[in-house]
Length: 120
Image 1 (cartoon, rainbow, N blue to C red):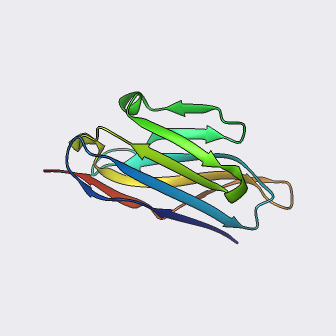
Image 2: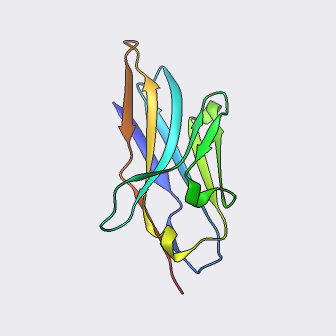
């Protein structure tokens, strides 16, 4: 079994900041990458940011320069620092973990999601 726990969502005013965390645990041999995706009402799920074990990152165009993804490999934990938040950042944010299981197969696992609301 794999567990993914997301935290840090909430309500913030435009221009404010939030920091999301995602911790993975369970039957994981190693993690390939971790990423944040978001889905707003009526829209498709989209990539926010992704980071690999060696620290390579990529960001969605709408968040470049405002969001920063980081990772603590020893803790299998990923963070997303979100600054200069805009109302259009409002969405449910999901953590996705791509990992190698003990049987050597590559799998992925999604968290339950955490709500981020940007509103005055």
